[in-house]
Length: 267
Image 1 (cartoon, rainbow, N blue to C red):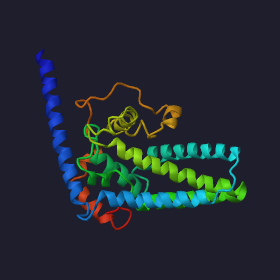
Image 2 (image 1 turned 60 degrees about the vertical axis):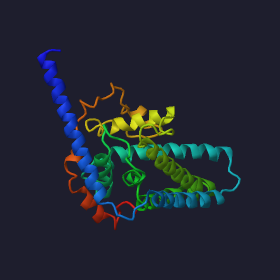
Image 3 (image 1 turned 90 degrees about the vertical axis):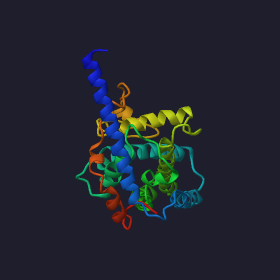
């Protein structure tokens, strides 16, 4: 190996070691802001309870759904997919957009999970994966005006089918997102479909790519449509640079703790 090559390898190794230390420090700091009473299963159960209740109410209101209305339901799922894409591409990565969207996603989630370390260390790290209850309730509240428009402007069933599509899509997102952060060797994480989905999401966590590629998650329809699905070579650990968020998270744990009372994640 040439001297230039040796220097390059040494520099890459040094960068990788520094990055590992930074991530370890970031995770330690952010966990310090997690309430001691936090348990991942309570968080997941509360989210599931809200989803199940909304689904049950929506389904109970349906009356002899026609084939055309079921086709519209498929269209609502597509609309939800676009909503995920737009939210992920614009508010979640834009510091100008108010507080909890940018903070919770870029400054917190992307700081905790970098391209080179996507897996949780223990299940309570799902605190930094799953949305808090306020976000799910806000999603439902935001869907109500459109559901009312379909209810009064089209049909009773379409209003409830819209609500059903929104909460079903949200629930699928939560589950698949959690699966993408499972530790290596987990039997579910080793499934072919989960691995493909996890890689798609992992590329988005590369600091150089996160504002430009892979904004959809489980089904990247609008990434394909708008040309934002990353098709380049897999970023290497040596090439990947730490996110700007990671540089600013030495006090992230304290910030996260202060936000737990509002739209911070549930404990």
